[in-house]
Image (cartoon, rainbow, N blue to C red; front, side, top):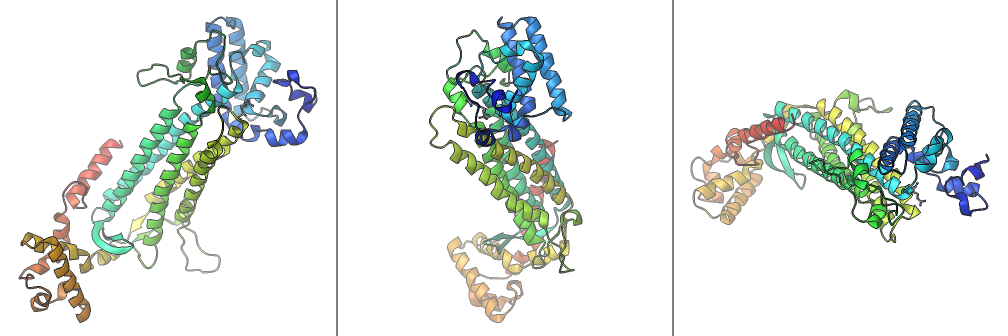
Length: 468
Ligand code: ARG
């Protein structure tokens, strides 16, 4: 059979000529949607099982179809299946291979359209991917918590406006990312939940006149709620037009990408000579072909770059669907490349971050030297005045004047004499320098969410327990 004739098998009844070569080239999606083969086979097997249950297929026909699909799946998995561009997409490739070996396969597409079929396949695929991504996030969280636990006593300046602000610990800093990535897990779960409705039975747009049993198909495919109750989509038009699950998945990827990118940026800064707080592992750094001394944090830079790519996928899907009239439009075929790319790069990015962070070491002395800048405790000194009864606004000014005196005398804040301090404000009575003891400063920050060592240890224990 010629390629042009072959392409007519599925829908060619009303056509005299097959599509132009250029149209085949432009319209095919099998070059990328072949990745949905496992989901497509699962979907067809569930559909055939349901069709037999309602009497549209005989048990014999059903069994022949199930066996045929299993055999095709094995061929595909072994790399022996011949994908044909002329057959346009994954659905028609598999169906036509099945029809070639099982006559009853001509009945498989009863009460089904590629519109509800592709919606089902993509939802199944998203659910599978969410499980993989969640495992990747858990591994990253565990690595970060481990790194935090090992560096509880490493003190660093915390920054606002990239200016030294107040002292924190490396552990507290890392746990900030633990918060972000655990929120990402919730967004992944939400995307999986959004995908967890079975569109099969919606047909092309308006369902079917045949007596199908949608709950059976949904159950067979695992589209069920926490109690095992089947979840079927509740509007046939929405079901074939909806690409929210893919968009939500890409949104979760884009936001997680932002978190990964911020972590990457912190590590890039921290591993620079200017900061010198961290050393990235050899395995995830590269040298320069020209400058022998270079040690570049490439994995982190690539990570920062990937976040643009995740945002591109999200923007792609938002733009693809905006302004599309209901219901299915062929534009929607192009939802897959951005979705697949987001999933692939997300998995990789999580694995690389986990591996890189697992090998990061901190230069404790360098960190401590930076954290010991007495100016970082200027706010603590204002608090000291507040305890003595001064309103905070006034205390802020008094310490501001003290900082100015120190700057003028070119002395560190804590090395001013009592007399010099009192020239800024008479309230700097004896003992004001005690504020500059770092241990004391941390011990005073043990309230919920604060960087005090006990508070951070509590958080580490909480995460260790919840990530087990
Ligand atoms: N390959 C198509 C896609 O992914 C399948 C649906 C085709 N439906 C249609 N009416 N042409 O969108």
